[in-house]
Image 1 (cartoon, one colour):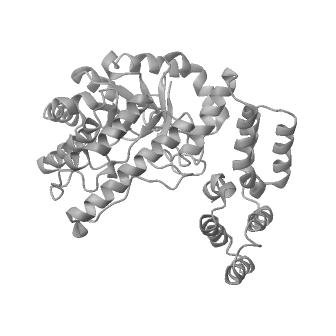
Image 2 (cartoon, one colour; image 1 turned 180 degrees about the vertical axis):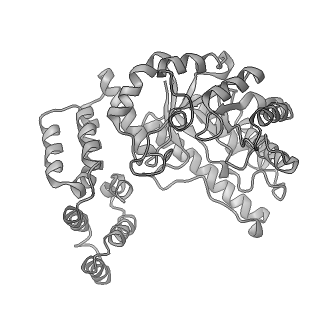
Image 3 (spheres, helix red, strand yellow; image 1 turned 135 degrees about the vertical axis):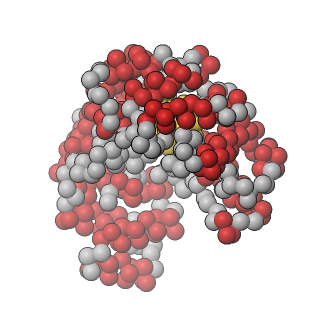
Length: 415
């Protein structure tokens, strides 16, 4: 079983989604961005390895304007060395990667122009994974598309246009149930006709589906769609954000809710892609929690995680901060810590605690900052511009390279 997240880690300054506007396209600019994106992809994978994150979704923007006809740069040739190096690193460390073409890649559209552009886009994604020389366990996720007033006909168009894809693209594709058009039952029906795997999304199923099957019953059906050459069954897991529209992903994974889901899912040993706003933070939380159940965590694991969360908790509730410290002092396990933090973060942010925490964090800079910086921070606090003050502290954290704060979650967890 592998646990992962999508595209952009929050706790390191590396990203693979640098874009290039059509009007600004030149071979030189495209090459510069590709080089930076590939370099950062390698660094992200190295970071993931250290944290046992073995599943990762690569951004579609890894090659800027990758599927647009303007980009005829022979990037596979120019960057062959870098691509081979990344592919080898993925294989050597048993990573599993994927990509997810976006909402405008719709191969069942009634518009032939849209279908042609969508096929071109899907083939670009295929080319990228193929350029890494990866086998067909590394997949491309696609939604079925629109209904266009006639779902049976729209399904038929998807099946017909699927056959227009290259052999490699067909072998890479897995199809996902969505939140409004195509239920799990729909994608299972299509899967049976074209013999490709289904990637099950639990939150989408809650939004749109019959919902009369248990997790185990669903997994039995989905598991049958995965052949040996497709690799381990892959699923998407997310939780509903509170007080947001149905289908909105939560800020973080509530570990207690995840473990309830995991009780039924674990028998199928799926690879689980977490779709959550705090990305690698939740991936680390889930991995540490599963390791805790196996008894493989060390004392340093809980100490290191608390160091990352401490200012987050302090900002919400100082009494909770003291309780967390007691959990660690009393040799509590990391699951107890995560559960308590999750409960704390369900409460509204307390302004008094938030102000106190901002001053605590400012303490790292009061003796090293310039007079102008001191005055600027003081002015923002006096004007109650707390969000701006927090952003400014993040800027100072990077300027003065305060490693302890850079490793923490304070600048990523709190609104």
